[in-house]
Amino acid sequence: MCISGGGLYDETGNELKLGNWVETTNNFKLNSQVIFSGEYKNGKKVGRWDFKYKKDNKPFFKIGGGSYDDSGDEIKLGNWVEIMGNFRDYSQVTYRGEYKNGKKVGIWKEMKRDNLSIKEEFIIVQEIKYDN
Image (cartoon, rainbow, N blue to C red; front, top):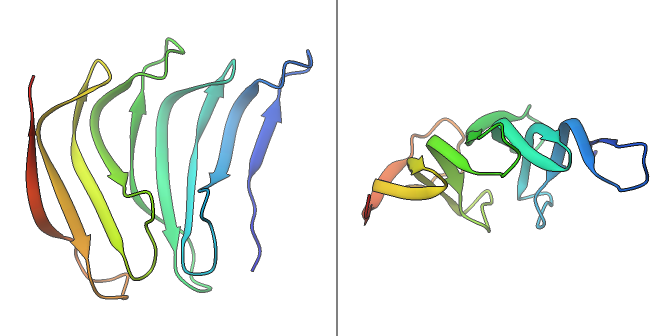
């Protein structure tokens, strides 16, 4: 298995991440190949971040993501598709909903895919309501 990722750090020795980065999840392994890609400014996530998944030797494809504000406060904004922390081939769960000023609002849908096929659609497991 080939794992690629990384990005650039600032040159001042502060180890702040800069520019475009590709990062793996903490439990990245053969049956859980999920990466995150997006931009850092002064060590903070900004703009669009995508979650990508791959099975076996197939290419990565987008399964989720969303946007951070550009102020550098890492505030999530707008529509997001997040993955469950232990997302893997045989346990694929996502959460779809909206962030307003960094807080979940409205109805969030917990989605699940049982089949190991990446072509199968996610189905709604439950809806979770967050106060506005």
